Length: 54
Image (cartoon, rainbow, N blue to C red; front, top):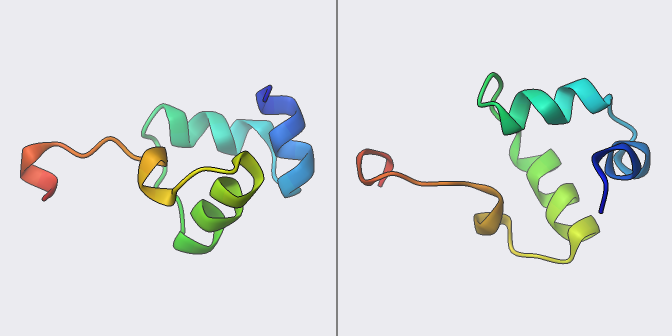
């Protein structure tokens, strides 16, 4: 799904999604759940965990 469409469906700014992608901002759990529901995926798949994060 294009980011513009995702932003519209979530009612957030496209720039906010870009910030998440660029690791400039941390997603709230509530928004992560909304994104996962919209994309029909697991919340964990929205994150890249490194060994130091576990």
